[in-house]
Amino acid sequence: MTKAPPVIAIDGPSGSGKGTIARRVASTLGWHLLDSGALYRLLALAATRRGISLDNAAALADLAENLDVRFAADGDGEGLIWLDGKPVRDELRTEEAGRGASTVAGLQPVRTALLALQRSFCKPPGLVADGRDMGTHVFPEAGLKVFLTASAEERARRRHKQLNDKGIDVSLAALSRDIEDRDRRDSERSVAPLRPAGDARILDSSGQSIEAVTNTVLDWARELLAEDL
Image (tube, rainbow, N blue to C red; front, side, top):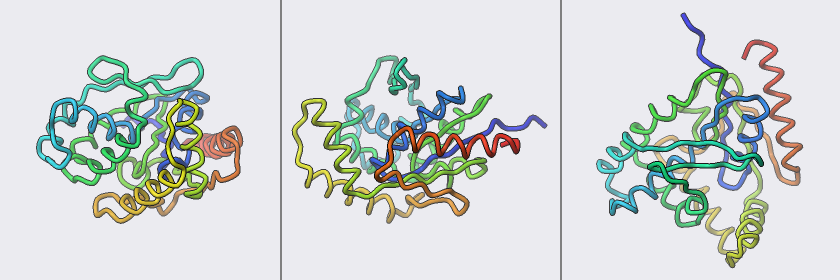
């Protein structure tokens, strides 16, 4: 029997830095990348473009089964995403897109439809998958499971800086409230709630640089790779 490619699952709340860390780890290892959170944002965006209500579970599930999406990275390690053959980027990083993703992610028919799509990203030589239920639901067999977190205050400050750098003026207090509300929705939902897997390694990125967090995850990965991850 052919052995399945190794998987590193990086889960955590919004703004914890899991996407950045996953891209850097995947790039260093030369592995494939899955931004599962982007899938839900992409689905919400595709639904909005088609006039599909975000509470229409059946229509959303049908759309999810046929979602045309591709991931890549540019030379600086930034994420590149194509939807229906056309590039999308900033559209997925708005607060509206985040709320839409959280809404559709709580619908069981949608999660079922996207499950096979997510697992299809697991190809040799390996996969780094980031999201909220990669280690608990999508890839429970992952050799390395990381739950990356940070305080709500720090996550709000990071998001505030990102938006300000893009010339978008938004209230830090409003961002903090939105993050706390989203954390509550994600952790209390009945379908695949946000929580660390029982065998996940908890990593608090508060006060740490991107390089430091990336190196910690790479050290863990190499430790397990040495044991045939």
